[in-house]
Length: 367
Image 1 (cartoon, rainbow, N blue to C red):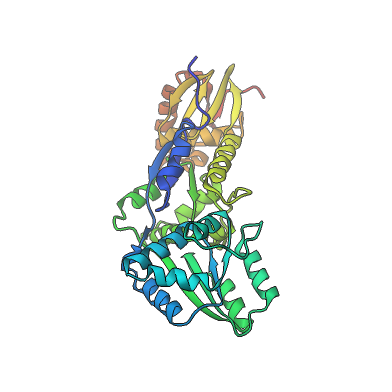
Image 2 (cartoon, rainbow, N blue to C red; image 1 turned 90 degrees about the vertical axis):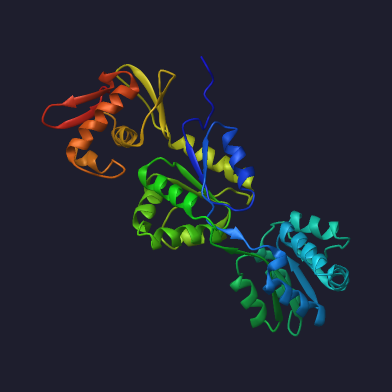
């Protein structure tokens, strides 16, 4: 029998702009189908007037402390300055400041630039960097904070409240996607039941996706799907914040790494996959497919919605009216009958789904 990979049958939607291919490859390796719908794009650093303005200010008014929050951001900042002919001057200024690195990647970028960090927390968290600064005393100091795609209001406001002058350095900024088509199609997949999980790597991507859903009248449906069926996975609590504000549950890895995020998605999908016995056959649901006695069965979204509903309470009789809500687009009760017929054909064993006269349908499991 051919080995079935752990994520075969599942469809993963990726909204990231950065490292999207790397994240997608982790799922494809496990057998998943990946659909890309970038929710954001990065403004090229060399064209970013806000970054150049912050850099010029830093060169004119040396900072006592510079906080590097991401490795790619710090490297991009130095490279952009080099493109403007300000690279050496920026490195000289940074070398005269106390450099703080949020994590190992930021630390590595600092060292690659020929500089050295003065502090880096074991927790790799902005919260611990902030605590270190406040405990050290920042009153009267000028502190430059390299942002990483979104503002850090609590971090910046806390420093200012403690008496520091803060220069925010927006090393890369997010804007909406240049082509919204892939994201629109991904949202349609969330609504029609053909997408099983959405892993998010940044809060701006989450916020942009939700904004597009709201603008196109799909937000209630997207929220409902994320609450009930689609796994919403976030690399950390900051990324999860826009979803949490809507009451959407998320899963998060113990460490904020995309490899850990991919493992969390994989583990969650596998744990949520119903395994049951019906009609003497073993059935395992796999996102957009099912295994019946180890045999692969591709199933279209509408009949798959019916199968998921029946599998939630194996053996219970579901009325046609109840099963209408399991259809991606809703509809009439006759649509349930059509989906049941297609489901039986897909499973290859009609007796797995029983008709209970005048009542509805059930999986053929023993009471």
